[in-house]
Amino acid sequence: MATDPEFQPGAAPFGNFINYYSFNPPENRLRLLPAEFYTIIKRYSADRPLLGLDIGCNTGVGLLCRLLTPPDGDSSTPASHTDFHLLGCDIDSVLIQRAVENNSHPAHLTFQTLDYMDTEQRQETLGSYLQRFGHAKFDVTFCFSVTMWIHLQNGDSGLMDFLRSVSSWTRFLLLEPQPWKCYRSAGRRLRKLGRDEFPRLKTLRIRGDVEREIDRCLTEGCGMTRVGGFGETQWGRKLVLYRIGGDTGGTETGAV
Image (cartoon, rainbow, N blue to C red):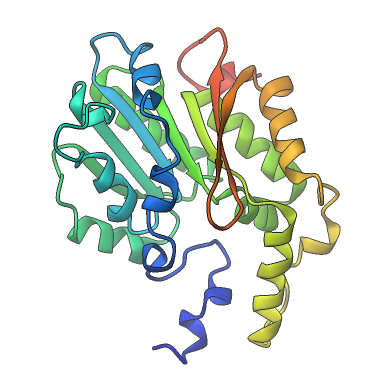
């Protein structure tokens, strides 16, 4: 399998890497979160179950199961506070099938194949999940190393549409955007495999300042407030928390 180009990292045009958590363990992100992270989120959910969304969850079990299995005596995790339910979505049905098969928390953890940029599919998947709990929005959305793939596949306007959509579905957004150097690396991997580069790469106008433009879109165009940053992963990617200001509930039609 290691020599098959279909299983090389560069052959994952949507970031849907095989065995992703084997080379980027969830601890690389979780260790950066402060003890009060979930306390802050819980403050806005009253006595309701806490709902989370992971966009681009891969096989899911790495990160999401860690969130639902706190260390003994650790009161800083969501499972220690109240009911915590998570929806993990990925565009790759094979990865989602693996997630379902290895799901050790089926009562709290749901996996579903979703092309997030498909508006109708997104509305149905997210809307029906929220309706199960009588929620208008997710309490927190995790979006780890997804923005570059959205950008490469859908262009500048697609990236902005993605950010506007995500902000309309959640109260808090924990974002790990890829800096421009990651785009160059993704292009090199494709060339190394003898494949065509991402067709939109050369047409992108948002380039070296991609992280700043993402922040600007969220804070100036989506009504979100930058709560703070939690440092960088060992890959040099920042974890940033945003909070929606003036919740208006429900659907993307309410997004700014």
